[in-house]
Image (cartoon, rainbow, N blue to C red):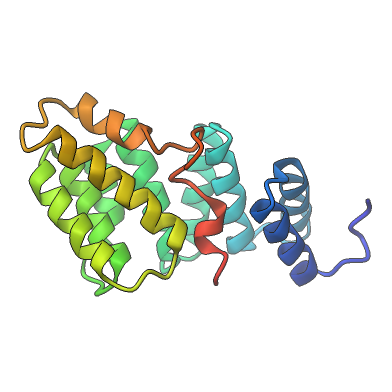
Length: 192
């Protein structure tokens, strides 16, 4: 199918539909086509990065999330997912800096950002408390809430004696982009 007769908004909506229906190859082609037309389309950059993360292509995902955050520093979900990726990568200081602007917001994403920082710093009790606070708030992104619930369950099973960073990384990896319930879902932003 040729996309030359579709405008950018139509192409973006069709890419989102492909993402939501598990047609990864179609979504990648549409997002790349959109970015060829408009290389600075931040939302397409974000979605392509999320797709790359979901496919386990973490270097491409990181580059894409960085481009999206650079182009739109207030795109909270891109900042959050880059922070997640940095935590999984073990670059805790950079992850903390990336997530810091989200921490003062009054929404669930803020609590989840604080939880990731706590978990990355081997503070499971604080991470669980922050996850509980986030889960108690209205959820704009149900898929994210599900992932954070799984992370909370995993951390609470491990308890307060989270011995090493590897244990935290294992908890995060349990809901990683390759698994059945990935933390890096392009659908995190589909409501926007």
